[in-house]
Image (cartoon, rainbow, N blue to C red; front, side, top):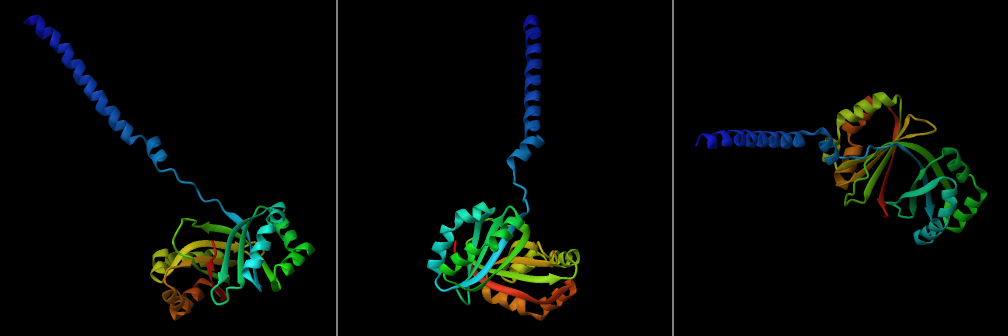
Length: 236
């Protein structure tokens, strides 16, 4: 019996040690920062540049066919397809937003004599408007909304304006039917700011944009002149 007790005692000690170490390792695994980071990996947003082209066309389908056929020329100039929209009040007014890798090459592209001929062939009416932006915020999460609003205005001081804009908050804008999707600054004049919203409620959005409260807020933020508002629908 004594021998049995002497035998059981070390076995019991080993059992307790194994259970203790097992529990400790399990806890350590749950609290391991590396595991937590791996479980919530997210890709950081990297600013990018875009060219925005706005023009009217005689026929969208004809223009789109020519636009797609011209893709290889755009790529030579560091331009890649991003977004196309059609204005709501005039669906032949087209807004093209393409990503660019080199601003100078993109500007060279906009001045190509060949481009003017191709645009004429595609049925572009009147002169096209080209502008260039640094995109500093962008939410590309998929949402089931195709209505968009682009707001472009000049501000006295970007940092002052941004503080007022951020203090207003995304939640407030969402209540007004506007969902933040992007923010950009003009490459040629960084005090020109472009804001992009998805529109969840058109009636609320239009009422908010035209309200005295919004006008007062923009004035406090240092917005100069009347903002340029473009309501459009994504084609893809």
